[in-house]
Amino acid sequence: MSFKPKYIVFGIITFTIIFLMNYLGSDAPDKLSRALLTAVAAVIGLGVGMWIYSKNKDGNHPDFD
Image (cartoon, rainbow, N blue to C red; front, side):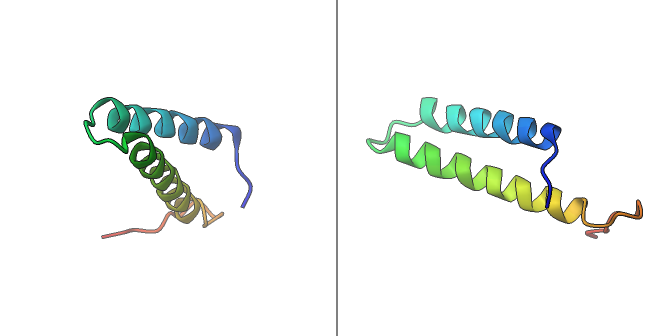
């Protein structure tokens, strides 16, 4: 799987938004570790979703219905 620059930018933006939402909105004593784990999981999920979406090279994308 080759990562295009726009996918890397989407991953960085997703990580930043999810991390800040969890870090700034939490009152838990371990908010840093929770925010990091949630943001990393979001980027991994985004990467898997983009890999599945771009798996077909013929232009037909899989339907998830």
